[in-house]
Each structure stands twice: as structure tokens, then as C-alpha cells.
Image (cartoon, rainbow, N blue to C red; front, side, top):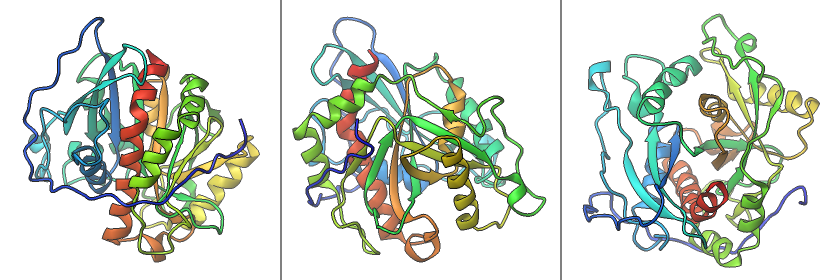
Length: 336
């Protein structure tokens, strides 16, 4: 497969109100037991953009049923006792062409941590993940969902990137003394491939209906938008996760060090730079894994392109939610 696959037609999607009721019963599965797939967003606003795309009937994929067992929106937990240890919703999904099916759980790490602790600390994210690991059996598939910077001067703001390989860099020494100390022994500083079959990526690329639908339903972000918001997907795409970033440390210098370290380790197609995909990846080392990442800013431009910018963050996370919505049947088929 070529180093990058840039696909795209520009379009816009209408967003439904989150107050719409989606309480209808899901269609029953037939045949074998459905797979368990967990989708884990990092922050509440990443999860909210994802939920908006999944709950919008204009954008709904016919292979995915209406979200059920909704626990969203929900209040911010002020203490551990307030945490609701359940996903935001369940979605019954069917494979693109085969008979396989899955129950997809939509989780958000912010939902699983009290307001009294730092949600940016890698070890706190790992502790929150335990509520997901304890919720059910080892999943048959894992999807990390979040926002990230895209390297380079050319803007991909508003695009969504999908890949499977992770590179984790420990940034504990990049700032002051206050930082977490999370680690994944044997997997920090090296490329960590996924067991997701390469056919998943090639089948998405070979499906013009899916790709066109994704690109046509994406929204243009207001600040430095990409020439066209589009899906960027490749089997060799690498997501960088900088963990244990010290308190009050700016992302830009940390991200540049992480990019250099990943390139030294052999990464040639870096598709996102963020803080959490690696922590999610570590929870189930053998499960097929992909990341679906929203791009609200270029690396080094979080402050001027995305920070506290609601339309920029919402537009990009909505677009990644649209991508996940339409690639999920291919993922179910690939891991069945």
C-alpha cells in the first residue's frame, strides 16, 4: 500500500439535536453470538462530537442500528461515587457483506473520572480504563477515538485519520516535577503494530461508496481548514502518544520530540500526535485495534487553531465520528 491515501469530496452534514429520543428496540441478531467492540473517547467533547454523528438519523449507516441504552448526556461526576460505570450507549452493528455482527460500546474516559483529579494524567486514564475492562469479557475489537495534531505545514484540519500502529513516548522529563508515571513495559519507544487484518484498510479504500459518503458528510472547520475535509487511512499510518506530560507543559515541544523519536524507531507515515491512544492500546494487547482520530490542528498550532475553540473541536470530532460510523461494518467483517 502507498505511503498515504488521500481521498475526498467535500460535503456538509446536518446535526440532529441530542435531545431527540432514540429509545426504540434494536433489531435482534441471528446466528452466532455478536462480537464485543469497545470505542473509547478521551475527553467529553471528543465523545460528544462522536455521539452527535452516531445519533443523527441523516448520517446513520444502515448497517448500524439506532443507539440504545443511552446514558448521555450525563452530569460531570464530582466524586468517585458519582461515576456511572457504563458506556454512553450500545450500538448493534452488522458486517459490510458477511453475516457477522457486533455490539459496539461507546465509552468516554472523562465520564469515568471525578472532577477532583487530573483528567490529563496518563495513570488516571489507565485507572479509568479499569471500569471498561471490568465491564465485560476481553473485547474482540478496540477503537481509540480522540483528537490530535497532524504533522507538517499543510493543513489537514477537519480531516479524520485511521490506522493501527502506535508509538508511545514517555514525556516525563520534558517539564517540571509534577507528572504521572504510567508505562507499558516493553512497548514504550518502539512501534507497536496492531493485529487488525490489513484487509480492513484495503477494503475501506476499495469501497468508493463508503469513502464518498464519509467525505460528503464532513463539515469544514472555521480555522485554517484543509483544502477538503476527508478520510486519511492507511495500514502503515502511525499514531504517536506522548504520555506522562508534566503539568503546565506546552504540547508543541513535546510533540516535536515525539515525532523525532518515532521517526528514529522507523515510522514513515505519522498520522496523528496526541496523548491517549497508547494508554487505550495497552489495556488489551492482543485484541485487534484501530484508532480513529479527529484533526483540529497542525502539530505546534494547538493554541492558535484549536484551544477552547468550540466549532473547531466540534467540527473535527463530528467528522471523525462520521468516519467511524461508516467504517465500522468493515471493521466488524475484518475481525470476525
